[in-house]
Length: 68
Image 1 (cartoon, rainbow, N blue to C red):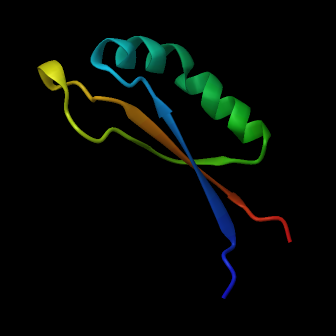
Image 2: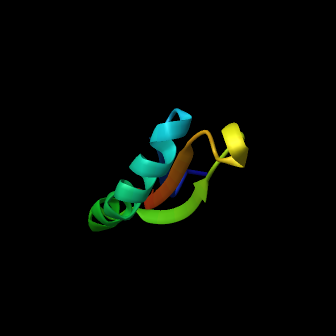
């Protein structure tokens, strides 16, 4: 069976200081830009815990249907 979707992973804010500032400033813009290209938001994932319980980084997971 052929795969019907493709997935894209966009990582934001590696390093504890940049996570908060970069992610807050750009996550909505990044999701909007990808939505215009046909991508759909699946999940925002924050693996690992850094200093003070904050995420080490965020990963935006997107999907879109493959062109036939």
